Length: 220
Image (cartoon, rainbow, N blue to C red; front, side, top):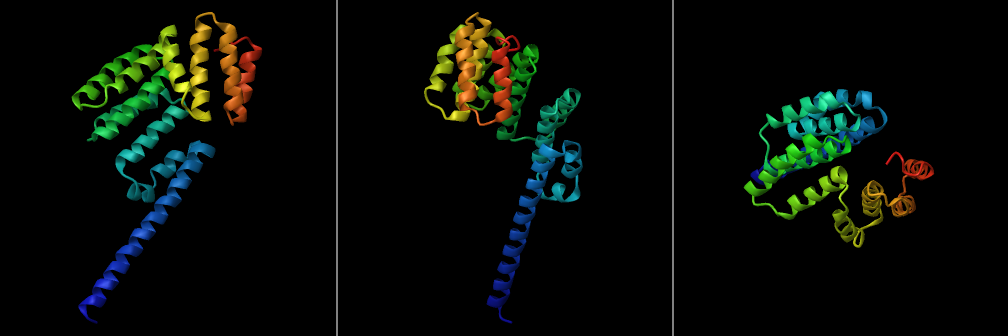
């Protein structure tokens, strides 16, 4: 067998291995998503299995674990996982992704003190890495919407509503309803919730929004 034949065999072998790895990664990605959604009690078992540890980078696995703890309200576990991730060697993108996820998490559980403490670190990170300053502005608006319910945020919300798809329109109308209701603009807030119902494709979400309307947005 001449050298060109060996080269062809080597290329074929490498391509085959690459394809096998790609197929296995796709298989276990689907399996992880399925367990996460349908069998959450089995998710960590799959996440810690040998094939997943071989196919997925450590950060990706531990970030999925953080998402799992957040989604299923394992509050104590979230704090432990954050400590674990922060001890890891992370690149800029990975650290930025964690900052964004945690800020949204603290907003969702109404942890204003933790959110504002993390915001300072987030802002410092943006400055240190010369990232777009609009990122700081956007996060400031998010905290003002959820914690201060500041009416001055309405123009910011409207700027997004004027140029977004239906999924985003659901989110921005809900945020607008939060601010309006907190400032005793109940009828306007109800209109926003009605827009959420019109634009969402999630039937469960529609049911929740309908109940909010029936109870005069008392739980908003």
